[in-house]
Image 1 (cartoon, rainbow, N blue to C red):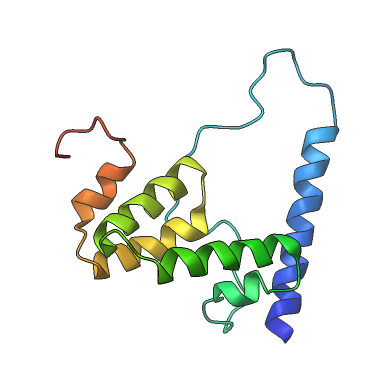
Image 2: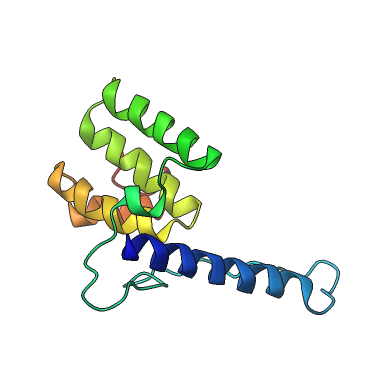
Length: 135
């Protein structure tokens, strides 16, 4: 229960910083508000020492509408797997890369390797569908 409180607190603090950054000061017309994505070696926000790895159920419990929809989608996606696991992991990795989903990228980098993806294939996901090596 303590981990849920810590995680929720971290999410709320991040939300305050994000909203504060968007409101404070005037933006130049046409100025980019989002910096280019750089691959991270570690998550931007860490858990407290000794907390271990936070499972998604702690980060997104079933109590909010958003999380209920997320779990319904995820459950359907996993139970009704009509594509091979390897292809599903490529899809998840590409979506995580395009949406800058650090946590999902990190988790599915490992899961993708367990599904048979090579480090080269995972790196190629960042280059898009026109990268050399895709069939």
